[in-house]
Length: 240
Image (tube, rainbow, N blue to C red; front, top):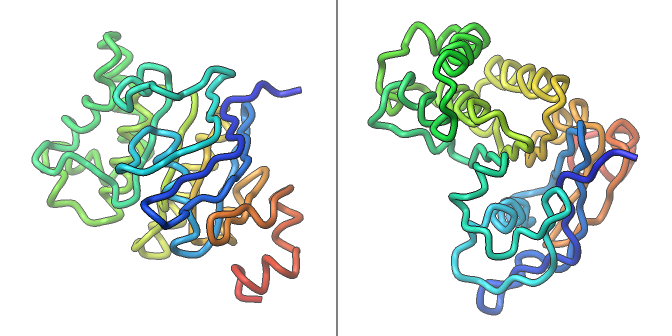
């Protein structure tokens, strides 16, 4: 039995009278790439914010366990020290810092200087565009380049769990292909990933298991390959 990395039980989130998440269960085990798909407003990003403790003022119920320990009360800035990294929707790069400085920020909890530089070179080899622009301010990059940088920065921390929120949003098809290639490669290296994504087909093709979220509830879950051929999933999310 694989070790549980993340286990969500009975999660509910409400903002005032609006119930964004209505009691969901979700699990990510060691070595898994799990995807959470669904339409805009389904509650996917709220779920990630609940995990990372970055919810705006709202009422939250339920239990979130990370390596069998509750995340309740753990400040968001402490999570990176516990190996939990997130690439937020909209990239969230440090716009007034260079690409190189952004990558160094990703490694700020590390003090192994030689290995940090080796990792920077590693990600430059994966994303040659970043290497060409290493001294350029991150705010001047295209959306796709910023997504590359945000992913490389998160991976500089050597995460034990990587959360990705809509990594393909607003990107060109060729850039989406590159981002998903990296997601698959990172997963093959054994890093557990929870991927929130609107491109259901690509997400399910890459994932081990999937969850479909609708109006704050998990409505379908199971093996990702089986979900690709599920008539309900095809009709709602795969355009078939």
